[in-house]
Length: 274
Image 1 (tube, rainbow, N blue to C red):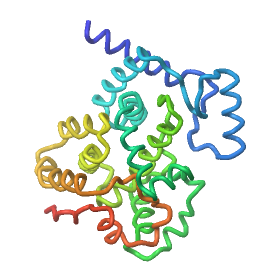
Image 2: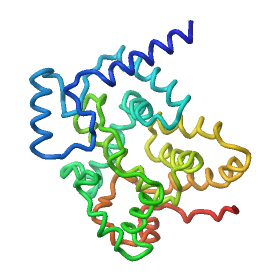
Image 3: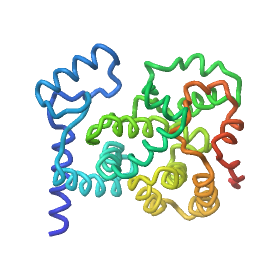
Image 4: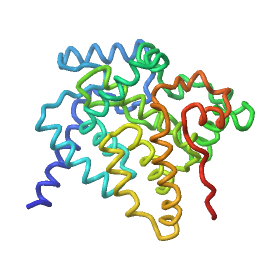
């Protein structure tokens, strides 16, 4: 019976995720006029939509989405769509706390007001690649190149029923790779678990806590030993650091990684034997 219920939850999750051809499948779509046109069309079809990718859901639907996405995220941590849905449907309280922290900080408030986005269309990656080694911009570009990822792989927020909180969730999602860069962690399972521990302490998002708790189950003995050294550092750094959403990273590409780590409060990474 439990299996049937979980399968039903997943089916409903998948149905809602694909619902309405009016929502963009290409989440790297151009900004500006095109997005406004899409939003206007969505509003005409469903006036309850609060932003361009919003899919309104009630409490029961959110519960089913949470259950279905949690099952799939645990089964396959690389199902980023399921991880994203889990974060949106379970993170309301944490997102409000993060939003309030941003409102109380001058730089965080500026971010909330200006709504910067980290996308291929908003960043000059050639300039970042030409920056000196050790600068935040150069190391971020290196991280993307080495791991064969782009900022456009981050899904748009769909299930957060507040426009400002949806931006907070999107901002968290888009600075995730910046956290990898600052923490010096790759995108393999070990690196993702370490970053999730840091983010769990920083944000309190249930999705991060779940990933931090269950991610280690997929690690072999060698990586578990490394995790035993890295987790205390990640937790301590998360507690010591200022809110990572209160930094306008787009204005700090020329700053050294070491300097930015110190300003945020991220402790120097421990040395790990190969």
